[in-house]
Length: 469
Image (cartoon, rainbow, N blue to C red; front, side, top):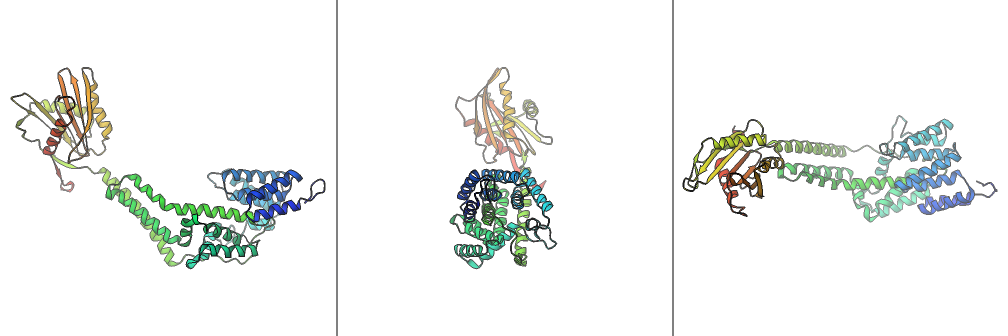
């Protein structure tokens, strides 16, 4: 490695490489960049610079790594180590989020195969994990297995990390040992407790997530909890998300610490044993429980949403001494309101008028029973009260009232009309709609007519067993 003046860049390269292997990523980048500025293009320095950026596993550093690799390949287009490193960098990208990066990595791998089909770089890119008939697990699966074995039987994470670091230092050309060392070092940190627990017991974690998610999913329809409550199950995914990020970063750091002339790992590395029968049973049961609970929750919620209370309507013969009479006025008002509300077909109407012979005061009761579970209360009341805003009528007050034991929603309004003032209270639930109207009450009286409306509603509607029909 010499520049145009015959000066060797080897000392600068070795310093940058040593810093990179020690995990001093920032110092390695500064050393490599300074040497490039001083001596000009050098394939090894671009390789160190690219790896030092890629090891950070952050978007900004990924862009810098991309630039370093591509600048190096512009100057050294057929350098096998640069091409192989760029291919691995592209493979590490997300095919959905970074399709360009993945495609460029594939092109670099194809170029390695074209230039040197039997080279160590090509064999590493086309290793048994990718092309062999005895397919090996992916890098993340091997990484999880090695970390789990190192932490087996309650071994302290710091102790396991120290042992792994010694092994990686003794065999600096073994990628698997480097990955294990970086992984255990990350898992030993106090903040990695969630990821560490998942690595130690992945099947128990899966079962716990399935049970928690199932309990929340079924609890929503069973206890009438708000639907967003199910999002609380996402908290159970935090260990998995932390583990995934931690393992990805550890692999990137391990790749950075490998020597520039790194080749494939030493042969004879053990394969991952298959899951035990017990672990497979736990995994299958966890999946069955989670899917069954989700399907049950969706079906249960849909059934509850479609349910509505059934009523038998029987208008009382009198109310507070006022006899029931019907001269057709209530039915006419009901027909008008049904047109205004656009209620579904199949509803059963009821109506009546109570009149005090001495005072001449009147109470008009109209309503329907039936399947109203699809009615939107906001839209319903807005549409009904629009009638009080027609010419010759003016709303003077509007308020929400207690709907009483039968639930639902009740809204009341007072208005000035050509024929005089009026007060109206309306209720709506999934099985009934009704209106009670009378003359205007004194301003601010928000209790008298709502109380009358509740009394008449509860006296008129008798809940029935839905299965009795």
